[in-house]
Length: 451
Image (cartoon, rainbow, N blue to C red; front, side, top):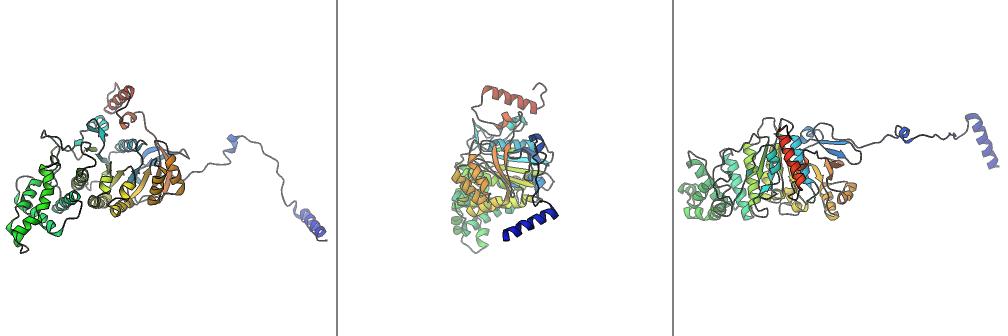
């Protein structure tokens, strides 16, 4: 009875309202017509203002990035971290990025070039093409023509000089400076600043003041003069390495004249420095502080400070502290710091884990090229990358990277123009045809109509 009533009810409903389900005739169409019905979708990009990096792999859209345009809107900080195994395109990305940024008139770039072959740095081709002479620091240069950077340059404030001297000593000793040694250093620095006239104070002046402290420095705290001399002995021995030891010919004299700090591109060639020696972090500390006081100015110029082998900075607690201050200070004056490292484990597992975490936190842009699966998982955990991005990092091919711009994650293929290609690929195994192409490209950049 219930089944009959249900049938009658359904029939009555159909009579009143029509069939409960409509019947539609099939529609035949082509793929060309269907694409207008099923529109493709893609994640939002970063806008169209800045320099072209390449294209998004999944959507095919052009990928444009500029930390200065995005800062304050989509980026809380303009600093950038680039990671990945060698041979996957990090170097090509850095170089094309700099060349494209230099097309803007209000851009200026400093590069610490820590790699190279045949006695020159990786950026030598670009320097030649743009008519720029790299600032080459070389402790083995005994000709008297080596470039020097003076930690006591008058352009650096007295407070900055003392902080830099402490950092040099702490990096060389591998530990913090004790209070007594710190007092001896401060007293020697004050004496040099008061007594040297008519020339730049230099490191030998500080070493001499440490070995021969003044009676005034002892009387100030009612100390015995011999005690002040003993307190400063280890400090003097460390600084003596920079004056007359294995680290000489770079920091013991006045700053070399002729370094053009107004050039659009300034390259410090560090390729002659042993990457694994204590000289590298000391050198980066001196260059960083020297640039902070002589290069970064409130003149509305947007500046990029690119550091290769940046683990020398981030992995040293004393150097990392200096660069933390530089990054915080420089952000207000339009500075974008670009740190290039091979593995995140090089920095997060080191002695400066706390300082490394602080610097990584300030890098709102992270670009990750191919890494092995274990390294990719560790990188993803530290950087907070989504799971899908972590899973594809080991499968990435050269030139393709995961870009994370403050949470906007995309897979991007870097594109290189024919003019850029011979300059950014610096492998000495280049073919003769490629070398000829590089010569033509350099001539084209120099404005040679025959190129």
